[in-house]
Image (tube, rainbow, N blue to C red):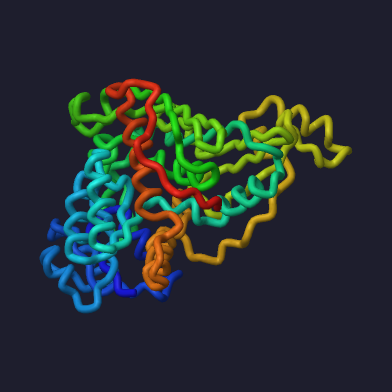
Length: 384
């Protein structure tokens, strides 16, 4: 399938670096409204750059647009692409307002086009292994999940020097204005929804803990940098998801069942191990000779969760970036292209993306929304 990219900033490099995993995707052109970004991206990746969206949409044979612009532009760019008769894969979130995300889904349906959204980490080997263990009842009936998306105080680090391989700077001002929740909650919201179905009720708390991010932005220009969401799924499972820029970096998830606990270290790593432990969080199959030592370590160290029986997981054969985000970014667009070629809706298509977007927007803006909140979107659940 012939594809094109709109938005050649920081994240675009990671899509380019993983496109080679999917030879069925043929990049025909790219566009960025910033001439310098366009020049840099085109020169580094030897990609054909065009001078306008209209020129991009007119590329012969083009079928799918990857919308990698900053979040404030997602709605306008995706709407234009859908109205031009193209399928769309958008970076997260679909839009910055629920009503806009709903409009995109409506347009896609009316035009008979497919729409999906990042992140695609739930398609990775680690998530698939965790989902398989849940389905097989390795921990009995799941009752509770704790998921963490804490990125630490990145605003205190030397982020001004961060660049991607082609030289694009990390967009600090955009990141802090959009907020940690909209940037990161989707990683685990997609996993949770894929495992347990749509959310029927949520109670969230959000707050701005740090008024100075070192970017010169006024406090009112900065989004909340902490959110905690308590989610009730239609399946009966409940979960707590935290997102923030204060607590130490932690991207773990713990699935608590009637017979045991499944833990995974890092949602941003397709090769992250999954561990099975007993109901008290102990490694039931630990070597007897080390039992007392391990029990002491399990009980008194922050990393005690990473003891246990390792759950079998497929080997990651995709090329992934050698960064903190060790994911195949192009796997999401490839899944959408496969569905389009088969003439069917993607497993995680427009309704799924809308639901995840609604949950993230409510969590980010919880201080302005009456709680508990009952989502108005849903999707047909097909377990991972």
